[in-house]
Length: 183
Ligand SMILES: Cc1cc2nc3c(=O)[nH]c(=O)nc-3n(C[C@H](O)[C@H](O)[C@H](O)COP(=O)(O)O)c2cc1C
Image (cartoon, rainbow, N blue to C red; front, side):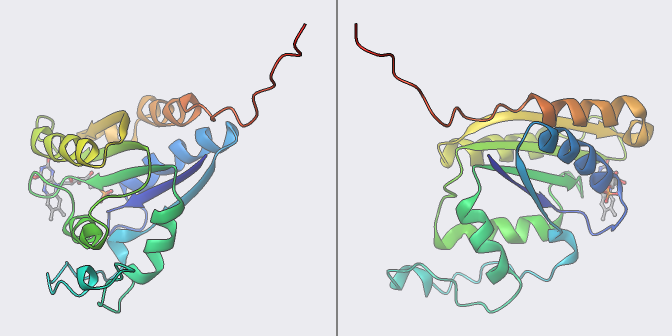
């Protein structure tokens, strides 16, 4: 399947990036196609609620920024992974801005979702997890898993293995079902 990872971290070689790379390796070994979009380093304006998109049949956003290049990937993804550092108990502002820009479609078409969170302290994930679960339910999608890492565990071998194993655990949908010959 085609897996789209939205990296909300602005840090080019940050913890989230390290986690994602291990996840990607596992998923690619399993035969999946993975794309990573560095949302945290892009300039995506939050939705301005101008309603231009809803007055058009094409539901196209009027704001001309980097988000224009993200929509095609969001349209074709079978699975979307929200990967983010915890910033003040939430997603990074960059990832949150991207989420608001889904308003023109209301929902994403992907059927599978996952979330990878990195933080400084433990016990800071409840708010983001509640938001993620609400989003997945609203999209009528399926949650494939939530991985959270904090503090010194961010760079541990055990964490990287966990990310890799998660990527490898994702099943590829059966592409062809051979029907049995009638007797
Ligand atoms: C603006 C900002 C806000 C943060 N807020 C929190 C927070 O609320 N709770 C927490 O445990 N860590 C917080 N942190 C720490 C990051 O979540 C942590 O360093 C994380 O591993 C960074 O991931 P990255 O390297 O992928 O960007 C914050 C860091 C920044 C820069």
